Length: 66
Image (cartoon, rainbow, N blue to C red):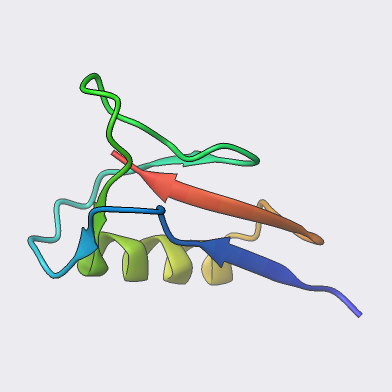
């Protein structure tokens, strides 16, 4: 069985704008210059669809953020 799990950031995960930009990471939250891990629901959903369309994290967990 092949699987993938997309982990949300531990904080600052809320509705917002879809920017179309995000960075992916593996074992640690993706943080911005201010040290905060954040992403909008809209960009999180886009990252999930991108992973479905172009799988890059098969059999592993990954996360996204700005």
